[in-house]
Image (cartoon, rainbow, N blue to C red; front, side, top):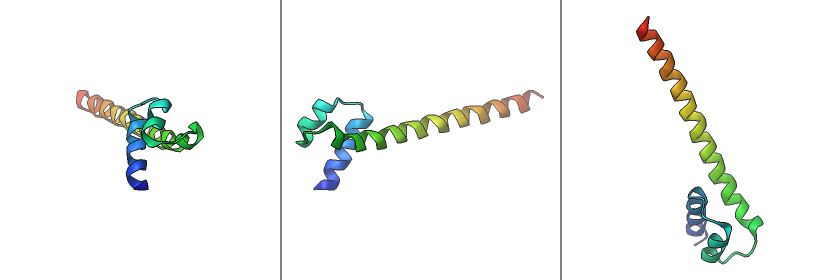
Length: 68
């Protein structure tokens, strides 16, 4: 059951659902407990953003090579 709750809270964190709403679903009382779910969601979001920037940079290099 813990795995299901963890997955649900992580998804909710990825969707930026408020702590209050997340606590109402999970039955947790502490924002500190929820912080670990936000941390993992933030890490995933940061990684996706970094990879998108890297892909855009590589695509711009390829475009420049084609123009030459």
